Image (cartoon, rainbow over all chains, first blue to last red):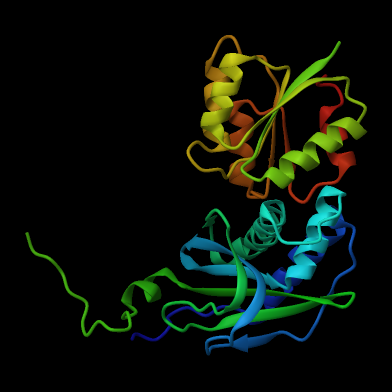
Length: 182
Length: 123
């Protein structure tokens, strides 16, 4: 695998995640949220329960942003969004979490584009259940910023690599990239 | 005069929030229609024209800028104000929306006051 030819300022990543998350929670939800100590994660995160929403990013850099929280917090977020009570995860709660991810990662993208160039966003995917794990294909590092909102925790994590780097990464299980000659 | 509105966003949560904001803004609402993407929006407009469109940009099937272009190209709809409500914050996207004829641009996350401000003078 070729070495990274471009570097990314981790401090700027963290700063942008924090700014985006706080703005969304303050403006749309009226909730106070505090960032904890950020860290980098490479290994597959252990099984977790709750709700995760992922948004892809592509441009000169490629990767994924995601938010993860408990089912209870997802219900609380939806309740704040829609000014109604939600006590169990249903379609409306999942939609609210997906939109939350869209806004947080979307605003993160707007901030980080100043350094990384234009990026496009995918439509959010939301996962809900018990005992699930997420990882990316080539085990690139995730920058994780844990947030506290009262007794609840929300993790916002981002993984970005230069697009050229992604293209040269070997997929697990394949010995060599192959090409088809016509 | 009652104002008929079309809200276009692939998020049901955002559509509900915008409906609530319109009510809080004391807009004299007539019918409030909803669509999940640009294709559905065109179908709704064809069946019933409205006085105002609030639209996201990043949506499947037909995005908000494509929808805006279609609305402005249709003589029956071209005078209908369209406000873009989106996470897209790049200057390029804003300029593209303005050049296509958007009446306003609001970035998510938004407050009710920001929406009210954009509506003032349009209806």
